[in-house]
Image 1 (cartoon, helix red, strand yellow):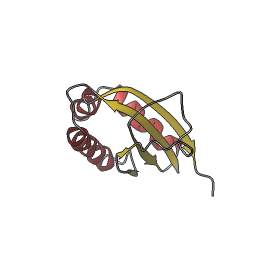
Image 2: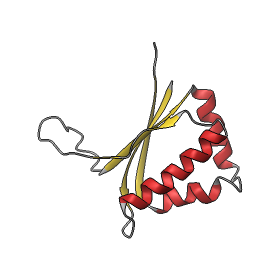
Image 3: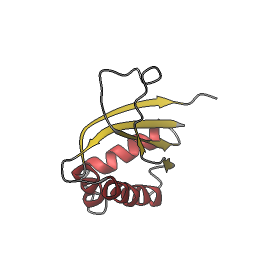
Image 4: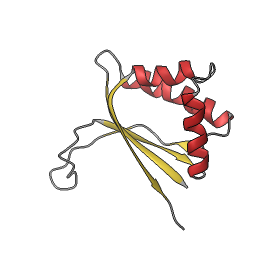
Length: 110
């Protein structure tokens, strides 16, 4: 499975429940188009003096989106980049709630 980890902070006027709702809408749409396997919960960072060692990023929230493989992820990116009428408004709603997103990807190998 191919995963994308997203770290972010909330935009100044956004609240986490707004973001979660927007992400749920976007994930549901992408699932219905077979462009996503699942989106994990939106979690809040818990600073710990020993276990949280990332001093370069201070993001407060994160979530993980999972795809069957790199090809499904690439198809999702292509769909979003087309500015499709069905996905553009829900994708924009996700981005309207966040600032400074950082994405990283990895592949499970069984």
